[in-house]
Image (tube, rainbow, N blue to C red):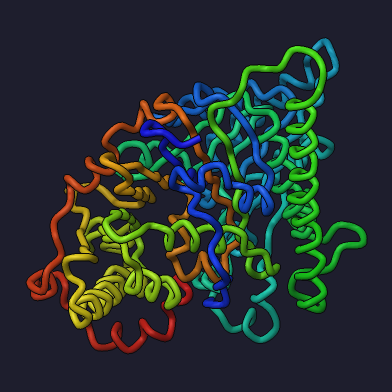
Length: 498
């Protein structure tokens, strides 16, 4: 499957140190291991698609048009209530058309939100969605995921503004019939105009859409269900996420989610066998393969973590690995991985001015300074180990913009040509402490043997790094990099939560 034209991609709507440390599987990014990708297929289902069905969205218009014409199902998981306003309007119109249709219409809408973020304030996601629930109770389902870690005295003491740091529903997948959108965040106008991010559209991929629908529904089944009077309840026979036994709840949730993963994997294996050995004319061979990577550590599911570790440790001496993140907060395990690796690392970070919290009021306004402090500590470790040439830091700087891009590239110096692995979207390989420890999320790994898949993404890494400057010791002498003492003292205590 490998050729000089075969990029690898990790898409997103896009995670503690106990990770598998056994013998790594054969390198799946080199010619000798390209045919041995079985190790990931043993973990998750494999979906073959055409690369012509993959595109990058340039505006939210197409997203909302898809929502308006939804025929059988609409499912989405927005993070912020402000984004719900246009979505609610589109859903209302689609459901109204379904009711007025001359022929029976089976349109169903499923919405998965985070309980803490969706319940914050008097006007919130719940209140925005109540009219839909009240008008279409048989067609609309709103599930509110509540982390099992926020319970008891902790739930009473942590202020509403900060309780999401204990755990946040971070799945960002949007489904419309057989279409899937993988997002790094919400699809609002600002995220397409002055925020560096990524939104990938998988068009007419029903098997992929079915899997994500089942997975989101499974998470919804172990979540609280919003009622028309703004109350919540669990499904009949389900365990409560924060009132009951935590271990029993997490085990039940794990079985639910893993049942979806294993069921889809078994179906795809049977389908592959039937396609390869069955009678009759074979369908066109796919040129791109999709692997959904699920990370739900509260439930003991760490597939994305295991796959990412392998992908990041495989690059050999002479390879170059590019990582980008708007919130640089490596876990200890991943920091040790980077510092002990053989490949050259180029890490692109957000300068304080393009951090999404820059200029915020109150404690939130100190978050950019906390990231500066974490960055400076890491830079000092790099220098103390004499690895300044192998591990280089750069900061994204663009006036009036915020930075949230999650693009990773790996270049392998095989033969006389460089082979590339590209990682896009999602929550960036599990480099965020909260994503590693607290937040259920889904990423997508895709491999392809055609250039068409990346035709709309040419030079993306080069463009991002072209808008950056190198980090040196002098960087931290600038007035904007001054970190107050209280931020230095507090950051080590709370870095696992942001």
